[in-house]
Image (cartoon, rainbow, N blue to C red; front, side, top):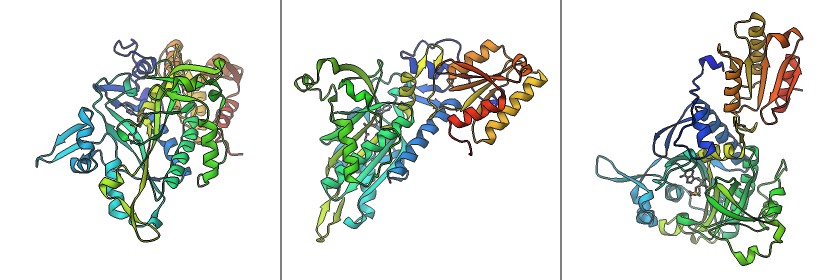
Length: 447
Ligand code: 5CA
């Protein structure tokens, strides 16, 4: 993409309404625009990151064997009357009436809708286990929408629903989600710690929240510092294996880690004092096992091996897709702007032309641009007629992990400059080598 032809409305002033750094930076970098309280338009740069996050979620869901689909945003109130949640959900639910006077609602979550689909089409234990998920907009009329996309009213969520014959099978589905989430968040450059939590309006006793540590987080958390040394990394795991998933779950959840809702001071005191940590965290996902809470009242049953109809055991598993943009920025920025992890960056590298209009510099930039594109990478070429300082400031603000700077002086010596956004370190090297370096960082070099 050439910046002169892109739509990147960066702001010079720091917006006064934004209280936390991720919100400020998303507004300044032209990623989002508020449309009304807690509701945002996703401008092109923000939309690119949102799609990258979705893509990682889809890939990791596929790896775990989960099946994608799409359910609507508007739901019929009748389904929610069946589960008993229509009244229980309270003022957070946005209720609407259609022209025929029928009660509808903008879905805050989808347990009822998916249970209805299940009961219409699945009748035998032989069709289990089943995990269906979608990535869809939700609406919760939060009393205090704030912090930009972090606590929105309209927000994008991945929600997955598991159906199993027995509690043991359903707990394996729970464990499998926990494992796949560890990998999902790490690919986004995040450490998200599973913590024992409270289930709120979704229900059930077994639930973990995934928290990214950040001073601006809304949750108070208590944990054993040893947890932050754990990495899931690139291990190959068989998601069908009960033992393998169980082992990973134990590794990541056996140490003390709880949100304030479930915190137990006496238990916490057993953690050696030098490892006890109290901090704040951003909840980027939550998994629930709630048994037959929805299947029983809604009649979602299957015939078991003896032909007896039994309600299925269910769980639901959510990732805060749009909230993740805020969480990643909270975890990765400096005073100049965002620092995108390679896994989610909107463009793989920025190209800064120090002397637009200089035939040699223009040609070198174009050639870098074409070479990166040919390798399947997406560069952002700042080809505007602007001063170098302004171009650097924009690149730093929007946070591309790698920048190639091209100027007549370097070209005389056959080199360009490759700069890491994270470390600020620069290196001079021939243009082809800069391209190879970036390609190998993103792992796209054809050997
Ligand atoms: N049905 C279950 C799981 S599928 C569910 O709704 N879970 S949840 O309520 O925990 O939401 C899942 C994730 O959505 C949360 O972990 C959080 O990351 C994100 N989320 C929840 N409320 C908001 C909000 N107001 N703004 C942005 N993200 C939110």
